[in-house]
Amino acid sequence: MDTLFGHTRSVLRPHYALITPAGQVSAPLPNWPGAICTLVISPALGARFSQIHVTLGPDATGAGHLSDKELLVFVRQGAIDAVIETRQTRLETGGYAYIPPGATYRLSLGQGVESADLLVFQRAYIPLAGHNPPAPILGHEQDVAGAPFMGDEAALLKNLLPDILAFDLAVNIFTFQPGATLPIVETHVMEHGLLMLQGQGIYRLGDDWHPVQAGDVIWMAPFCPQWFVATGKTPARYIYYKDVNREP
Ligand code: UGY
Ligand code: MN
Image 1: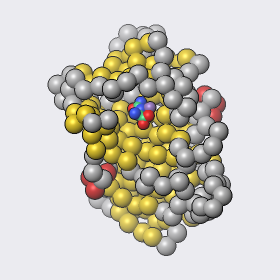
Image 2 (image 1 turned 90 degrees about the vertical axis):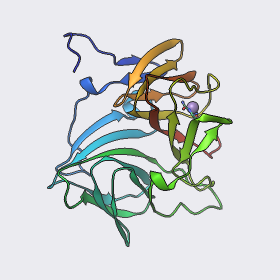
Image 3 (image 1 turned 180 degrees about the horizontal axis):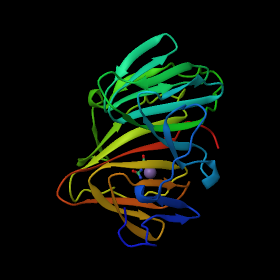
């Protein structure tokens, strides 16, 4: 919590939003009965996707049948049991599930843990002629190799989803050593939803510079100039969504 009443680090601008944990407000969502849900990014903001933070307790589930939507669920803390179509697995912290359009799913708290915190990216899937929608994916970020970003060993990028045209979204995890930066001020058509997982840094968004830390959320609209430097003495990590592989 901010200790100064009336003060917040959260900022809302036409081309970006910084949403800090202290100001977030939860509200029930029909597909997550019993869960604590916070929509931190949604089309109400101008985004073409939603980012939902979900806490599952013993009596909560996330369940449904996706018609035209797709979900990427990442376990931030705790563990869950995931059933997607005929596939069933336990996802520990760092595990993730891609649930494609047309799939039936059920997510519940894993045995032996008191709660699980989930990061969910949700959007309408855009079909591509000549390509079937992707199949479900169940994985763990530890099994994904990081690659130096634009040749920089101090900025490692993991792509959680395959780089194939059937996917209209990418979800990646960046790890920056202290002092490492994005090599350029990116200005691109793709939009982002981002969650700081660890550490701290300075995010340039448009013409503004914001100190950010673990738990902070950023929405970047298409073409929002963006740049990051990791500060502090430990690595900074963030996970982010981007739209990919479709004609304008
Ligand atoms: O994939 C990206 O566009 C990424 N480099 N952007 C970001 O980290 N803000
Ligand atoms: Mn970017």
